Image (cartoon, rainbow, N blue to C red; front, side):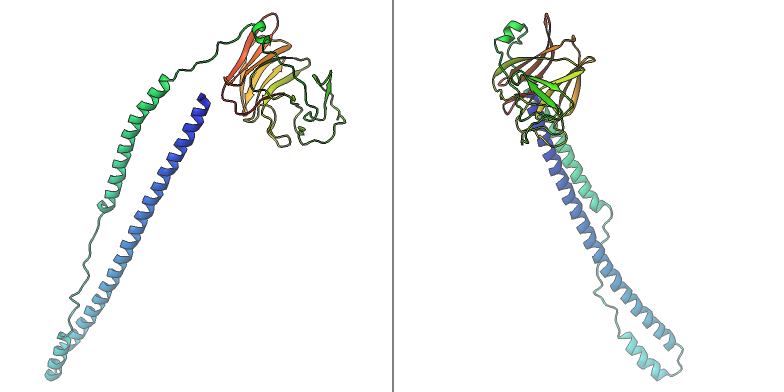
Length: 309
């Protein structure tokens, strides 16, 4: 598996792990809020009962105060006996005051969980780093000479059904020229409508080498999966995860894949060689003149046949 695939898998796994921790965090918060709500409700009930008891005591105190000023002794004895028989409820609720330490136990438990998780991750990180370090990447020896590359030479033809309307094909569909004027192409679902680009008919899945000669201000040579969008924005060669492109101009070279560009240094040439080893996951661009100069090399995993463009 390629490094990019391992990075993507690791990113997905860690994303799922983070989401799992976030879910547990939300559950803990909900438990704390629910407990807080229950305690507040219980305390409000106790407070209301205490208010009623206090009101009753104040009422009896007032009546006793008034009775103390009466001069009718018989009335005093009768009233006092009646008032003294009213007893304050002995079944007063017990009030348990739980300080911040009560919820502090939750914080302590979560903190201990964090420490255990960090210790676990440290141990697992050692295993992961060791695994990465012992991986042996075996790549085929890099082909450098043009003679070696030409043994994988393949004949390519441009597909007029994919050509942007202002591109003209000639020389048996082996040459493409920007005309600036619409060509009489019929409507076709494979035709690019937003970018001046064209694909070849041939889908490549083995070892292949081809060369592109160009003139003018600039040109883009690329490879692409067949299912690249033909009508949506962002389907230009290199500006998505379905194509890899090298932009060639008088100012130099620029490699683009998945909308990420890399400035490429190398000798200027009107001929660019492209070598694909689909199984090995390598794509190499060369400046071709009297000598061969490697401009840029891609190491990845190709999941579909590639169509030159």
